[in-house]
Image (cartoon, rainbow over all chains, first blue to last red; front, side, top):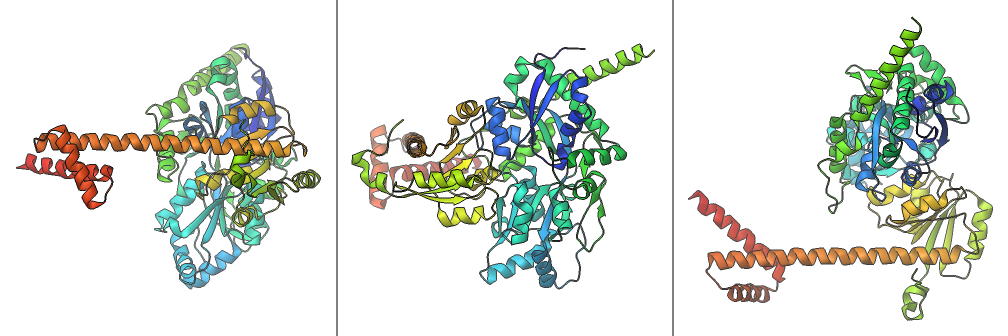
Length: 370
Length: 212
């Protein structure tokens, strides 16, 4: 097997349900099997995770799919050549509205219940009422400016012809989401697990729809690292991708998913209850304290979807994300998007090399075991 | 680093600056507040875990934000400019962890963020002075760049209009320029705007002729 140029690796992550591949690879010894000694470093914010990655304090990190593109363009930071050789997960986000907003929606539309996934146009009457009476706009929170959460929230509202100027969008750190929803500081949020389930279990909101109801099978988290790190340590990067890919494949089986949920519970990782972590991993979307869960088999995807393997960073997915960044007005006029941007950031070539490495290993294993 | 506490700029230097300090360590926060007593910095403190930060930012309208680099609220600060379209504010981040220097090197070339080591109450005032100065300097440069770009653009339109006039009206360069300047003076418009109008008019006439 190839040898890593650097075997001690610091890998940054944000404690979320979809950090499962990183935690599984660590806990089940997959990194060691590929000759790496990986330290997982829990981070409190995407901005600091990014700054540490740019500075080389972290060797690699779990990132929101649009983040490597934002880094390459220098949005929100100085430009840095961050690349992604591996998609870690699809879907996994959901939009939850507060109990107060739910009651307002029911009242203004004069309905007794809402069919899920909730249609965004049901908000229109609430928005109109608030505007006519000079009340504050509806306020929705997401987790980071360059996140699928933000674009999904916008798409949900736009698809229902809700004028985005009539809704306020803010960023709140996931750890404060549930408290902000409860205090009424925000009326709803789009966030990843376990925070939607946590709000439902606490009886303070309704999960109106999942990101799978808005966008089907778009990359959510990716592995990000500096191109300069890859130049210096090409083998290390292949081995890191191989271990994570193995973890993603392991997460395909439902029984394994439950074991993963148990690992994620630990204080070093999500430090949250099993009953809020396990549901989405098992394809269940908790909806409301008085309603049954919805079955969303693709709620969290780590390895395969209906369209096949998901881990390869497809260029077309990168183009799709850039399109959303442009449409959200996130590219300032003084920044021109280079034509080769996606090809520089999304690296299916590294992914393919890693596939060959795994195939080679499997062949050697079968030869040895005769 | 340029000090902004120079006597000649006393009006700007003595103006009070509102600081929003986001720190979970209440003891450290209090000693910072004490250290900045009787300076031009007025500190509002907020523990990191507290909610209501967004409201606070709106209420306090801080001139500077001082935050622990490990605070989850950093992501919210990132959004102030990009999503909520607040004016960019200088952000001073402090970190008690190792590797601060490395992070600083990478952040330093950025816009307004500034990383310092573990914040020491005795050093906090010069650090804030430096951050404010750096931020102002950066924005001055950015404004200058924008002005220059604009100037170039406007010259380009004037040149183009001049050339089109020379071609279509068979004018000399001097005649074309004078005619534009006269229109600008008569109509009380900027020369640049007159040039733009001429360009778009002559262009559409040209197009019309092509169809004939």
